[in-house]
Image (cartoon, one colour):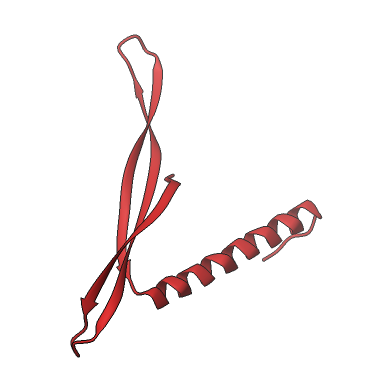
Length: 90
């Protein structure tokens, strides 16, 4: 499974079809995942490969995504509290 290592962004001004200037946000997610191998002596080794995932969006869509992620974090916290309390959630 990929693990999030860092988040950064690039910004650009673009013209829409009506000729209006709009801000475009390129979101860059740096992720890594382990790669395992066995060398000639039979020793298991691991290394992490770093890669970037990029997408472009508008500031509004970025805010909407952030709100969705906050909701996911709240739900994860609630699930953890329920699990520690012995309850279950569907």
